[in-house]
Image 1 (tube, rainbow, N blue to C red):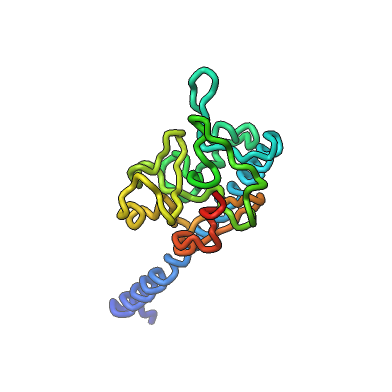
Image 2: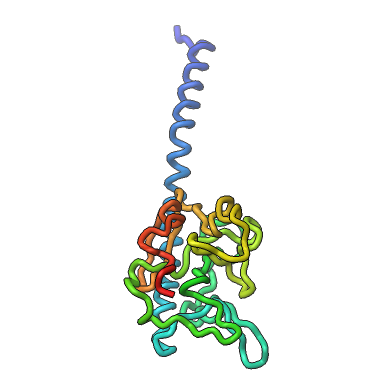
Amino acid sequence: MRRGFTLIELLVVIAIIAILAAILFPVFAKAREKARQSSCLSNCKQLAIAVISYAQDYDEKMVGYCTQGPLGTFHAVSEMLNPYIKNSQVWICPSQTGTTVGIGANIQHLIIDLNWGAAPVAMAQITMPAEKMLFCDAQNGSTASGVEGSGGNPVVWCPAGHPGYPPSWNDVYHGGISSRHNGGCNCVFADGHAKWRGLQSMLANEGDIFGHNIR
């Protein structure tokens, strides 16, 4: 005579499956985020190559955050670099919400605003370029008030000080830096490479990653 499962046995099996799911789902979610982080890092590498190519075409001068054309039109950094990338999706991080530009410029020290006569940063000015960050994952305008710059791209602010913003802004919004990739962000460096850095390392400006001391 065949005997079916009792109610107690079924409940035990269901409980075991629920426990296993609770253990494994966070692991799967972290693995998916790791894959998106790798995709974003690939985008950042393309952006790094574009920055170096641009500088080679413009007398070893770094691209600016925003510049004003002869007819009074403004051109954002993404517009100036897109001819070297030929894929605007590079600016959109796979882990971010929405479809706005998610890579922010180090506007205070390296990717500076070129309006009103400002001179671009020369590559020769950048000491230890392998440690100086040009772009990184940024919060967008829908996440942090004031992060979107006038040039149409997000910006990130040096933790050593960002005039015009209240002190609490850096505490709440991390100066515009996003930690969406497992507690950190992907960065583009001045020597043309890209890699992940933890949020706390960024906020501490370890190794003068923002280039605060070069200008």
